[in-house]
Image 1 (cartoon, rainbow, N blue to C red):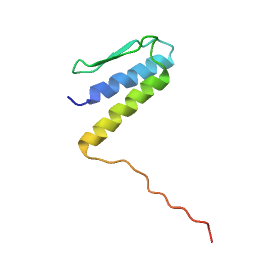
Image 2: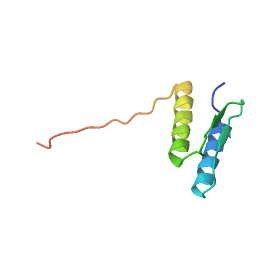
Image 3: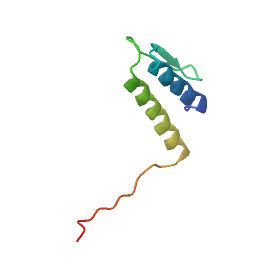
Length: 75
């Protein structure tokens, strides 16, 4: 099963809780999958999980995220 909006909201809530200083030991998705952290999740761990969820959801929807850039020497 794919990640859902509720899963993303759960991770966002965990990030806010971590910023308040709470320990996050486990995050459980809607389909029963869970991620456990032995010593508590760091903010970096939670941000990484949020990024993974967003990437998976974007890949499943067929949307690609990219940035077009242009450079020149200014001559």
